[in-house]
Image (tube, rainbow, N blue to C red; front, top):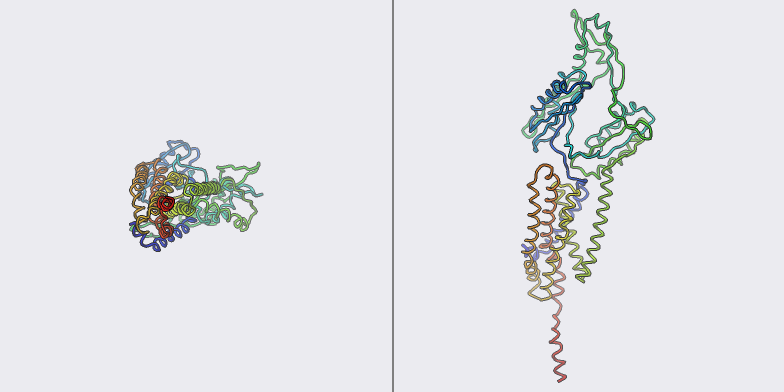
Length: 513
């Protein structure tokens, strides 16, 4: 295999040029984050019922939700928690399950139990769940500062701001905190209800039907059929015209019994800055996207969004993990460049040949570029765990190239055969020790692949990054180093061999005698 690369130097240079271009293509598209992706195939269903006891929450909320969740495809386990006023059901899925389709199917199953829930309980809310030990701070939080009231600002932000933030590439979800959501209160007239013999339960049941989710067919994909449902928007006119009962063959509409009054829900969060109530938007990043790129896109979109909003508001970024990560990556790159320059100077002092030093330094850069391109195509994120793996094997990247260069250089100085034989024989001379030491390191780290649960999340990316880096270093040392040294070796071998000192001194001594 080594001789093939040496005999075809043009093809070898084209191959490594293609790898460099592939690395340049993959570098800006790499997923960059602080830690490995810890998103698990889990959904959480949360339902609130203010004032209810744990036993009532378990009986009326948790058990119906659990029954509906068991009908979803791919469910592996269900755990639940029932506390005063709160029901939380965690649904775990198999690794091969598409979480987005599972969320749609779970929401459809919950649509069948909504009518059986208590009237004062909230609707079940389905969100992707991350376990407590893996939870981190919000990706980005932005405060909305305006002269409007907190409730009015929250209402306008839900309508105008939320869709625009969700349209930014890489944004998975936006949650608004502060203020209260608008609602419509139905004010019943008890005298009219007694006159028409209509009960409050009948009114609730009739209004609840307006919020039903109706089937709209299905979508077939990969041998599975996904049901599609639709939900109509409800207006105040529709509520007033709703028939709540029939007495004596005559329909009784809600407008005969009640009136509507706009109001606000009870606030669940209060956010204050400098003594003022504000609205805070918590932005979540989509899994598998570049954190730095998402942060940059959101920051660039905020001025455009502010200009398009029909109400006065100022944005103040409170936290931004992407910007913090950008600073850490910039600092890491600067330190890496400083180390690379120092390494170049040390190698130049040791080898005393600038070209040899440039070849060794270039082999390190080639191996790193190949690693990063493979990270992109294998879907591996660049984080502090994978960078630690590259740091661990940084010395090995340099050692393999130096061993091959030294072996070839010694054969060139000894003038053992033509240039092809020198390059091949010199590389083969150190091939076994390089393979032995490198594969020993790779096998030691690959044992991390057998870890499970929490340890696997952190140590498996480390093992993969070390394995890829070591493989790339062997490939560069055996394929590129001999070809890169070929012009220098040809020049050295083409020079006439200088006679040894004893041969040069002989005639002089003979003449003296």
